[in-house]
Image (spheres, rainbow, N blue to C red):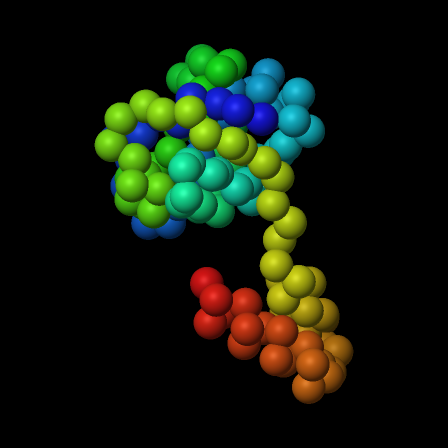
Amino acid sequence: MRLKIKPLKLDAGRPVTIMNHETAKKLNLHIDDRIKIKLNSKEAIAVLDIAERFISKKEIGVSSEAAKILHLTKKSYGEVSFCQKPKSVSIIHKKLNGNTLSQEEIKEIIQDISSN
């Protein structure tokens, strides 16, 4: 979905976005989902938060960390889409549940970490 990307004066420590609850509902997005934001040749993956009044239906707010990745200094239009969690998240849950990991699963975790 094409939305206006609004840089916020928000230092979150990681890329975070804030979307209007009606827009999120339309896109079937939920709090803590990962979303991909494309602006020109730049791309950022950020965690989603949802607000009722803070952000209009046709825009998405981004933290200073996300704005830095996108080289965003003022409002611009970009594409916003859902992004799957890395496969390594379910593998880590598997290990936390006491299961043994295969060599391939360990490589998957390392690859996800190294590719950020």
